[in-house]
Image (cartoon, rainbow, N blue to C red; front, side, top):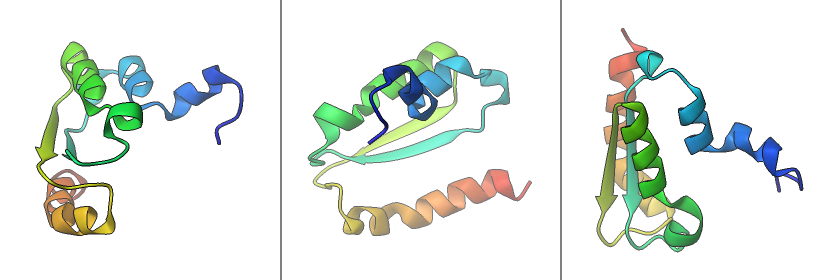
Length: 92
C-alpha cells in the first residue's frame, strides 16, 4: 500500500528512521509484542528494531507477551502501561 518505490518506504520504516536519527534526542520507547502474533515473523520482526536501538544506543524496552496475538484484546491488555509510560515524557 506504500507504492512500488521501495526508497519511499523508508520514511515509514521504524528501523530506517531510528538509524537516521540522533539518539541523543531520543525519547525512550516502549514496545509490547505478542509472541502469538500472526505478523510477528514475516512483517513485524521486533528483534530487528531492538538491534537497531542497541546499535544507536536508543533507550528502548521490548516486552514479548506470551500467548498474545494482534487483536484488540492485546492492545486493551497493555494500553494503560503505555499511557503511563508516555505521560512521563509528555507531561514534563
